[in-house]
Image 1 (tube, rainbow, N blue to C red):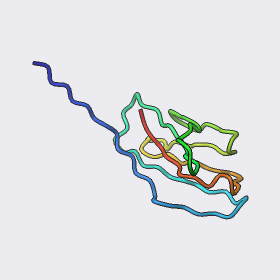
Image 2 (image 1 turned 45 degrees about the vertical axis):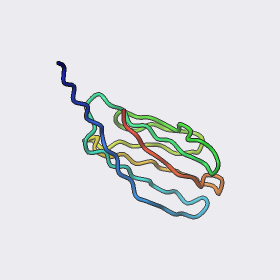
Image 3 (image 1 turned 180 degrees about the horizontal axis):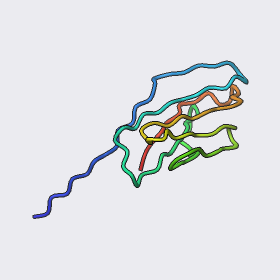
Image 4 (image 1 turned 135 degrees about the vertical axis):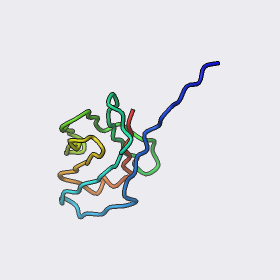
Length: 100
C-alpha cells in the first residue's frame, strides 16, 4: 500500500478591481502554500471566451506585451502582483493566477 499526499497550493485574489482607461492597475494574488519548485502563472478570460495565458514567473518579475505590463513575485514568493500598465477597455476581463 502506497500513500501519496498531494498538497495543492491555494491561491486567493481580490474579487474585483476597477480602473479607468489608461490608468495602471495592480491585481494581487496570494499563494501562501507555494512550493519551492512551483512557478506562478497568470491568465485572463475575456467575455465569451476561454482563458488565455498571459505570463509566468518563478521569482523577480517578467514582462508581457499584450496587454502591456508585468508580473512581480514577492521575495518570499507567497504573493504576486500583475501590473497592467496601460489598460484599455478591451482589457476588461477576469484575471486568474495559478501555481504549478
